[in-house]
Length: 496
Image (cartoon, rainbow, N blue to C red):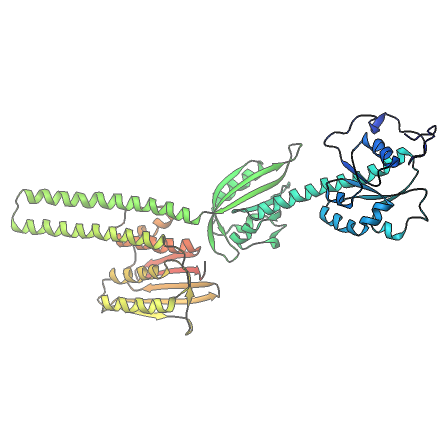
């Protein structure tokens, strides 16, 4: 091995490296150590280089250009090998991209002239021999350190990209907001599903996510969210939110604080899921249970009571009265069953495959009402002359419920109903059904907000049907009723 006293010619000049400190002396390379490829002739120089670098790195030796296909962390080439593989170095680097893969050219004393530009364009270092062993190891170590750093950075970048991709492709909305000392927590990230769910994207970065809240968002729920954030704890609520197009939707919002190594909250991650369908289904089951329980119990009591009366063999008039009540009650029960079935089929219907023309549907509705109620007058006020295309599930049924109930519950011999349709914007449809009937009792309209109570008519399930159709589409539903009549209003996105 070459040293100041070594008479054998070799690649080194100067003193041997001491076996102390960071050079690790004669400690053998582990299986996790970087690999150095010596692509050069099998001679004394290669043996000495392998010995010098073997204490720190795994060393592989080769003479054939095909060795470049192997895995390594740094390649040292002599001039013969360089001439053979110079044109292949660029493609080998490309295969390693984005990680840095270093090459160094060893130029011996016998070489003619200094390293050429052609060499520097292809390699990362040119080492002239002889060279001090410490200098050689240092220069190789610098190259490998650059590669190690690039690999570490590449893994970090790859992990970040993988994480972001996973978040972008997650089936729920994901937001990341910065923790602050104030009331606002500005967004720093929103994923693709959040944009699909809400209509808001990167233009909202820097704003607090409360822009999703609106007039009908519960104050109690807002306070619960704010308190959870202020106390830096988990939040799990169902909140009524608004999309960018003002469409309502029920959002299952889950918020978790993210803390650094010191335990300080730096961000809040939010998960948003559209649960509108679930909320409507839960409310529908609750209402149906109460309606059926109340009506079935009362009407079955009537049937049982009058059946007992018949058993006592009353006079003819009492028998006729008992049979009339039983018949009417049975018809009422049949009507309730049919109303429940209509609600279930309408609200549970799948998304429409293609738009329907609301204009055609309303003209057909007017004709049907006229056939069933010849003395009733139904007038239509529609915008323009062209089709009114909508994809709102159950909308024709909801409007039909409003019109038919207005006619049936009007004692006037010639009831009048007007259906008005307007387009407040390209995206929204506004429908009003206006009648001149006696009005709907307050307790039958207030149940939409206060909760279900007993209904005087099974037909009033139609109020719930209209409400659920509008709620499913994310619109607004309102009833204005009085002595002069009732106006039912439905405002909905044309294509929810």
